[in-house]
Length: 217
Image: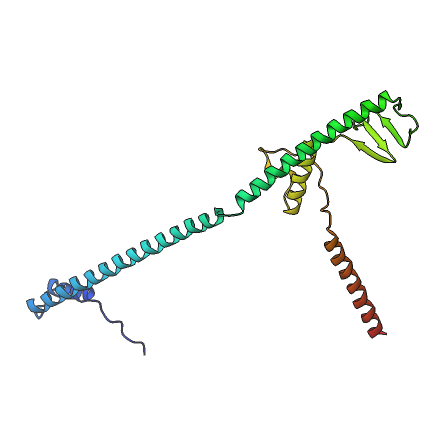
């Protein structure tokens, strides 16, 4: 058998009122008064619970909002940011200065070779020859098979940015519209230590493969 549901104070009061209205004269004023007080008390407790629940919900919401703000501030606080900006600024300045130094040296060498009678497109003189701009290439000086030409600093900067974007899995258009790149990505040059570690890993892998082959025979 199921347990009978207990009536609330309000339901009890409603029942008493219904009995009176139906002509039941057994309901006393005292009984009705107690039921009314109990129903009022019950409603007050319900209201109090609703107020407390609303206050707790508001407190929880404020805590969540403060947490969102704190997480945002934490994401933007980075002691390394200014150092990165300065490093990038210094790197660009170094690239520009290096490019200007090389441009000046190239122009002086190109003119000096012309004055020395080294022809354009001719056979090398003392291992050095000159080539005019063409086919998408600038003027060139070839020194012992090493081709030397002037490269604008913008190309180096663009290639560096494109390579960095590649390292982070981003496309060249990621920085648009602030920066529009026409560049190529260059592989990162290994340090001697990195090359040594990579070679050691290769040798270790070959050793494990040989050991596995010998076990399987």
